Length: 195
Length: 195
Image (cartoon, helix red, strand yellow):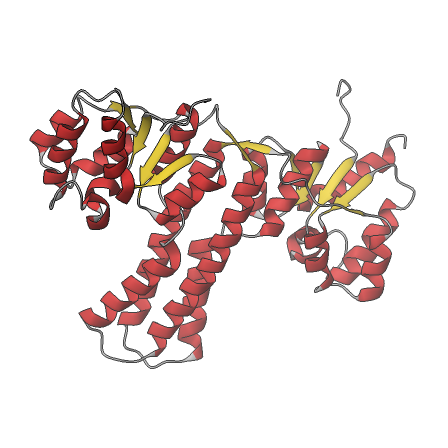
């Protein structure tokens, strides 16, 4: 790429429409955000991809009629998991991170097992929140997350997500990415330029 | 390798001397096992490697005099983490496995938080054991584990371990390996053959 111009191939994540901050400029609900998004990208010279697993995830948040329409404007494609190679250091760092988190999860479980307070929903809600935060915030923690990043790498595209763990992993393996919050502004900019 | 003969380059894991089943043929204690091992390999035409991190781990179980002697017969070497590449599928499967384990750990934590029995050491011991089993049995869960397998790959050696997770990962990325329990017999066999 010799010219200073935005990449026009994007891989998008559920968080673009589900995370309230990310969808802010598009719409109030996930469905409204997708509708507005479809209007903006109409006739734009860009290419959009999504891993099938992530598209299925998205369907849980958006009305069927709207995902049916979205499906016509976005290419579903899974990364070729066996043709992409990653430096072993990626797995090494990941396992080190997981080990630290497992120990944190253990300490949390002990803390709640010891407190001897009556079992109640508030207590269990708190345990769940703390545990999830310790184990899953800031790392890739699902197959969908891995697929997003690897598809972006395979296509040499730009990843659009607001998931901290997904963006961190994308950065680690040298993918172009943009926080989903800024995607609306980028689309406007591309639209202004010659299509 | 054209001839049907055993590989003579080995990467060894702490479990060879620490796991009672694995060290059985060598000796009753880790220290006794290393001493017997050193006698067997004396003048044998084999090459032994160990990642420095694993050697440090081993020092916790074996008397200093004996590890000092072992250090003269085994090469400490770390894998070159940045020159080895793994198929992305390895990370993908690993993350899927971790996700399942995290959910199991969560259910365990809830179960123990809800039981309302007085806090006592037996209860906490049970929680720790169940949690460790759910989170860590059968997967690589430490930097040392990764180093063992990657060094084996880099050297095209045979990995000697009795750790289930280590052996599984070695198999996944196409390393030669042997359960540590059988290493004594293999050494005897090599010794019988011409050196």
